[in-house]
Image 1 (cartoon, rainbow over the protein chains, first blue to last red):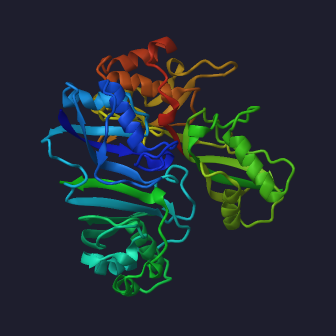
Image 2 (image 1 turned 180 degrees about the vertical axis):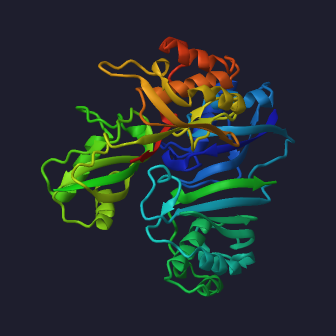
Length: 245
Length: 245
């Protein structure tokens, strides 16, 4: 059996997230069906670096699957794509050692949260950026984000999820960037809690709107209390950008 | 009666073009219904700089309409947008002299044709760029386009349309640009024939693929014969960028 690693991109707008759920259109189920159809195998099980929620996009999700296909990786990419709908695309494929696990072996993941803060929502980016009518103070957001860098207990920034062992994570990179009427918050970490980037985005947006002082972010982090952080920002602004192994 | 000029953007993917047609979702009908609902007038007639075909997008379409509304233009923009679906947005509004006609008074229009020539189609730009698997020679396309600049009879680049007087137009700007795996062909002219930009794009794509020598474009222009030019490129790569008055 080959163990194949694939890098893929998807527009999350019309998916109920990554994970297979009965009666719902999900990325996992769509991808598994496409690969099984191509290789003629009865059942393909695709294991992603992590689940993405309904509406969340991916520029560089990574997954692995075992298959008996004899197709060279260069031919596998267009062949899988030929069986996929146009809102998912496989970008790369590579043979990996048997033990490679796209979920457990991920060292870091980079997520990007995109905000459009021009006066009129864009017909073209309405699915890919969270819109705010009034301009946000991105420099205040960047300063407010500083305490989140490094190793911390991020319990204030997670939606509760049963049986999770620890909410300590290491944020290796956190930046707030602007180009014109678009802002993006990049967060790279060794792992993410449920809704963590969206809770960070919702918190920084409250700072950017002037609702909260910059110092509030440190206080929220210290409190270990989700009710103190900002709202979970909408899914359609969130992109999984890349996974590092 | 006020004569109001509006600048608008729309994602053409889910419209059967600009012009009202019975039983079809069109930009004109959607916009007229939104404005009439806002102002309470029985019938609003919106007159665009020109029709766009099914699937064609606009970044800066311009139109005018007569109305008795008392709303200040700064309030009119968000008020109309509140009545519009999210694939159309009004960007600006301005009071104009009674005689202003968005169609007849347009001096120049700029269209952009966008091509993605990376190996894998993008889930995010599938609606907004025409995809070619193999890289096109954009420098050959730029050189080939040179004979099209200036005043010419563009009959070879029009889909026939009854009762049109003349196919002589002046192309004031024509450029082929690349950024990474994306190419865009900008064409500005004092007027456009039916499907003219898409026929120019289809012709230059044939040069970029190496099917045709660069010199063929001059020969096609001279022949005044549509059957010699390239195919009409797909609508979803085309954007009306701006209209100059």
